[in-house]
Length: 105
Image 1: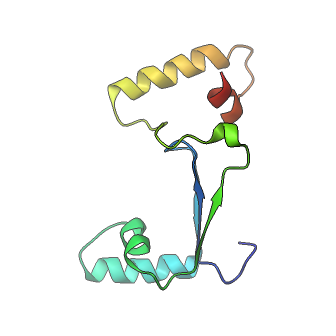
Image 2 (image 1 turned 60 degrees about the vertical axis):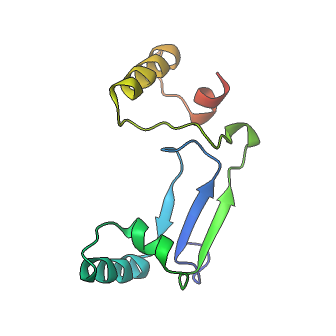
């Protein structure tokens, strides 16, 4: 990360499934030790439970990408239908497409 004092960087406002979360290796190691001792799995439990980590939340650069209730995750059969519709609409010439294409179409 650009700021060596940060442990966690998240992005706010993007549809669920589109935003990255960045963790330092040291924060991951601390999380692993703590969550294993408690019988829990996953770094998210640790990061949300401990206020001693230095974190930063950035906002999506393009406000047109912001959507606090949309989600682009593949968890249910209905999600697959959404992904297929997006791909059918945007993947027309064999080239890729961007989040802007998805959000603004």
